[in-house]
Image (cartoon, rainbow, N blue to C red; front, side, top):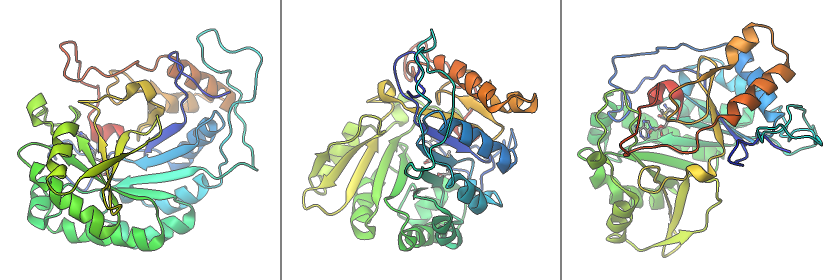
Length: 351
Ligand code: SAM
């Protein structure tokens, strides 16, 4: 039996933000003024949280931030995470009355390794890719919002970043961090003309390029429906370059997947605004300061680290987590009249 919310969704994916510091100031994310608001925890604390959650059915862990590669010790942390083995909850005859599973975490040392992924802006990846792979990282997603150095600098507000990121992508590929995904947030007025160049990039570099619809999670509060470049628009634009064929995707996968008609190059589109996928959400997040967030758009978070500070046992932490997951939001309300902005912006949540 696995950790379920009251809508019957199994929680199998955990994202841990290991810092809310970032060395980029992407226009759709940061104003650049706030810096690290919440700070971060010792890796031992994240490791304990991960161990309890893996014992409750989590099979995938993604490290994120802020920029996770800014944290010294990230390679050793990956090595420790890689020792965890996925396992569901111990079968129990009596499920909780709120529909959640009983909290009896345990590990099965014979199980397959965890899927450990990383989302990074890639700036520091070139030197770390092989070390991360050797430590047990399975795969990496690099954020890159233009395939043109000048445009890249305008979006990230960092000069000369482009070459570092490209070197990071190539080092990750050489290291065998596979599948290698490149995430591009499209924002009207900044980079919608990059759609076809990214199609070419996917084919030339052998990476999966995934376009993400801009969500209202930025510090600058500049989002409006007009700034979103939608899935339909991306598909229409790409079709001017080459026809795309849709590939079946797993229900819990965030991206719709496409390959070009000649089989060379894969494109993904993550469309939380125009085609929400909340009904299949399998994620919870832990922020850099140890709070659980059950939705990107949550207006509250749940202080797991405070439970640890107060001396909770692993079983008590698991009970706390079950209670939190029971309150996971059904869906987001982007673009609706009753939309309330999330209580944190993306850089302080961990995307
Ligand atoms: N620093 C790392 C990076 O750049 O990938 C990890 C953190 S970043 C917050 C994680 C992901 O969130 C990135 O792919 C980024 O492009 C995406 N993101 C940030 N703000 C966003 C927004 N307002 N809408 C959609 N995606 C956003």
